[in-house]
Length: 90
Length: 306
Image (cartoon, rainbow over all chains, first blue to last red; front, top):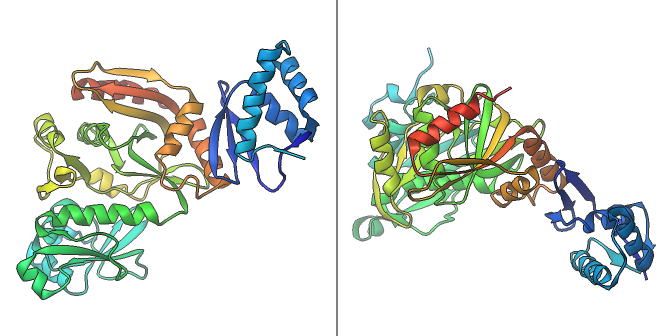
């Protein structure tokens, strides 16, 4: 399953050095992203990627182990982003 | 020489309001106000007397009228309708609430129109060339604090609307009377006996309401924008300590967005403008109960203006 950011809408990331805000033009909403969502979104902005290598990328960025707990957490993060139409699967 | 609304007497103003109407310019907006209700004339005379008088205007942003809908109601159920471009967006209110109704209606005009600005529900004041923006929900003590700061020399830009320029994120003044309600009226009366109030409207949906006149300098500078300096989220806490604590900009951004009338409507432009505004501001939470201590805290803060 390849994950991607739908190209129809604009995503803007903004940080003042503490946390990261994401503006999604489809909804007009602004979200505060958690620490694992930030590298996930940043990576998908570069192009589509399958779930497994995407999770591995996030773990590598944050120096985390890819264990069951991490995967379960990432599934939740991904599900939240997909519900908000920020990330889609093909 | 510039004419002021207070150059006329109340009878003259009342006659004008009953006929062609009064052109009232506040910040970038022009209202044409018509009403046969005398307390409206009295309130306008007292609270907007320092504003310029314009015998006519080429453009009117908001054409409003406050009157009874017909002669029967005028006689048996003395209620008023607020007309905006011949529409009545609100339920009628008792004639005793006429001036408050006018002020609420004028606020509504700005809140739901004029999307060439990012608009926040916030008080805005200026000191040392920088704007203090205080976004807050009703009941937070925003207006009481705003009134106290103005009475201690801060310039008032608005008690209700922070209008942020989409071009440079500067704050655009829209200087009008400060709305005070219930206990805060007495608090400000006791805080400074120079405070000048308009008609007292009792038993409104907000309780007892009145409006306080802005100082002359704030009205005079009503077309001079200000660079942003501080964003402070105030909270009145009964017998609470005076406390100013730094707040990270990311959560300040979201909180300010919650208090915006049109942030989502403006889309990416709203995000960009809010980003610049927050970037330019030091952000704080502020809790208080003692107004003197609160003013002292903001005096110290204003000294940090660069």
